[in-house]
Length: 311
Image (cartoon, rainbow, N blue to C red; front, side, top):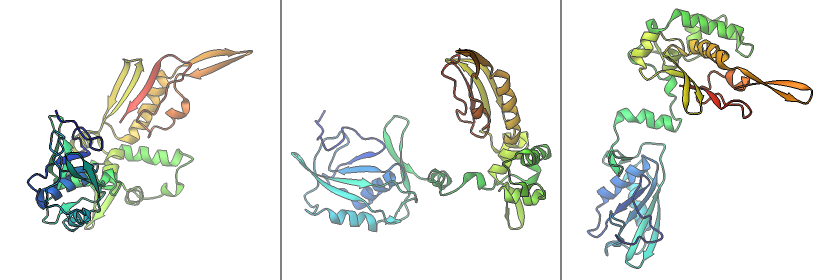
């Protein structure tokens, strides 16, 4: 195994790419590797390094000033990608360390090629096609698009459950922190105000939020098959209670509240002349049913149990 230079990582990773320049790497292959990094987590491409981390250096035709390399990358990417090129001197040759920023916009090569970097099934990084169906998820990672506000292509108003809608209206009417101006709205007005539907071409279509909030259970199974809430009570690593539901979220609030109250017992402790009751899980945590990921935290002085709701 070659000894890596201290300025160069010992192996490739999702953020580290090695490219040999012994045969003068062509611009197309260089730009392809650059956009792969930009469309993933960003990182550094080391030009002049073999896959096994052996430093073989830049091709003799490379100019002494590497500023032009950054210009080539900017001119061959859409949108123009600004990289930082460092000239790394090693005993076995020069290396161009090209620092590539992560891009919120999807970056393509100027001829339209779009790829991204990922870890393959063998645990090694690879550059793969970036498919249009993956663009929305990428933009959602940068909060450039609200997935919950997107209309569901195969959904209709018939996928809304009237009973869940009445539950929603009851929550609005009875919650002192809710906007009371919503109480008197028609179904269509309420759906628009809460982004439960989106109107396109004069047709109202349920959004992902609308389906999750007041959708029929069978519609949720069909249109959002990954939707599920699990309620668990853990004693260390042992599961004592394990309940699941695929119902609408507005129904989940009541369901989680009832389950939580049933298992959230108290223990009493003496503090001088006073007896203090401490719940197994902080009550404030259970009052935030929308914060479902590890919403509840065990009390340090109580039994080693947790009440956890997973979305």
